[in-house]
Length: 92
Length: 99
Image (tube, rainbow over all chains, first blue to last red; front, top):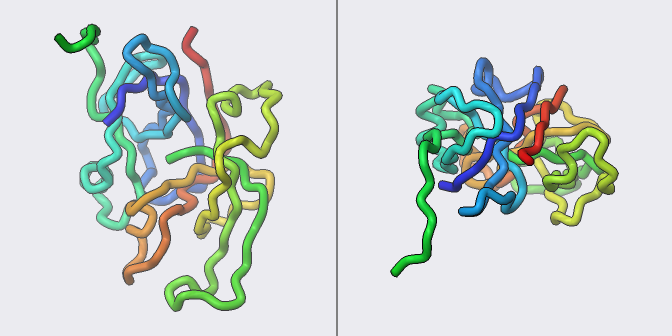
């Protein structure tokens, strides 16, 4: 799972049928300071994440397949939580 | 799923049984810079290009969303040696970078 920030969404008419009706969000992985860290991933979202909101995305395909309800879906990344507060600091 | 630009196609003369008749695209993955519409970043990014299985009919120059890893083989009935699949032909990207 990685911390990410929502930076937009993708529209696709022709897609795997399991993505029908799902929001496809552009999730930019971020570091603890909130700076971009790596290439953006497109994830499905059932939590209702808003633009520029921080989220946690998971690459667990089994959980994502269960969420879309299609055991033959290739879906992988999914928004699993919306970040409320983020504590920073080096371990003691 | 990552986004990328289709920069080529591959055809195979001989292949593993499960891959007969498949369509393959060479895809250059987007970096963060490629999401901006007015991006001056070269089409072929510095990310290594990927060969992607395609059953949606993607063409050279198009932007697609592709999925990598074990999940890419999930749509197949038989065990198939595929680890990247075209999952969406992108029509539109709405992108608003933070800061």
